[in-house]
Image (cartoon, rainbow, N blue to C red; front, side):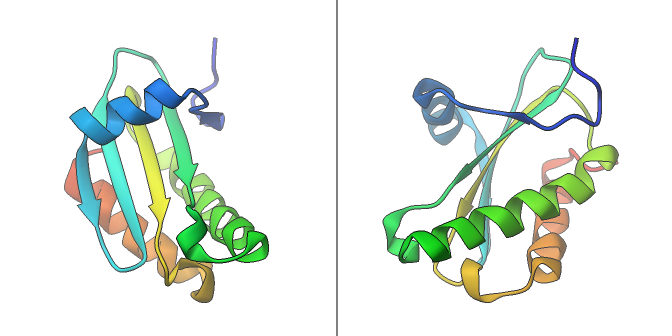
Length: 114
């Protein structure tokens, strides 16, 4: 049993591919969000950063600020969804508050945000 506010991550390649092919997506210059409804009682999340972002330092920074923004929004999310956040070229160069604002907007559009 998973607690409602626990961070559960997607790990398998086929889970990511399923979101890319069947999920709805919301894009901005900072991040792209893929969302799909599931029958699970939790929200699972995956974060993708390609080598187009830059070197390992920039990719890790992108993942860190996306993860932290997601953690702050987690208590306000509806359960039963899988989400993948994809970092874009500008992601490592902005503050986490900018990512948080865009993420909140995209999740409201998706109907996941309470």
